[in-house]
Length: 96
Image 1 (cartoon, rainbow, N blue to C red):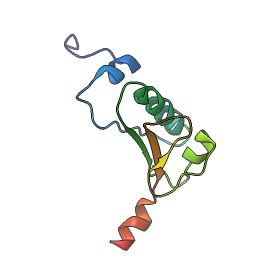
Image 2: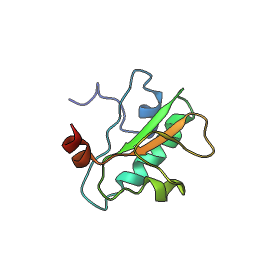
Image 3: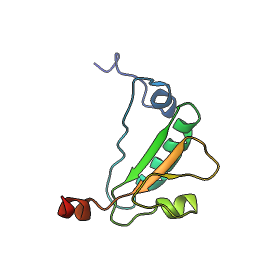
Image 4: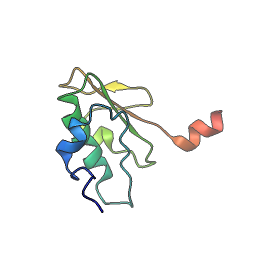
């Protein structure tokens, strides 16, 4: 019975004050970067701070936001509370 489950909507995610992490995953070409960026922008409208982290080897956050994004949290132009970073999970594991 799904009657006690919340509606699967963007507003449901935005309104969940207790929600601290959102993971976006899927096969290649399904829109993970687009979804993550749009979700980050919407969350930034109602949250104190939002960080988008890409672990995708083919980083696209820089392209999506039209600015250079690196391994450290980078403020997104036009926002006071939205940052993004692109990390290389394989490289970071080798350095540990």
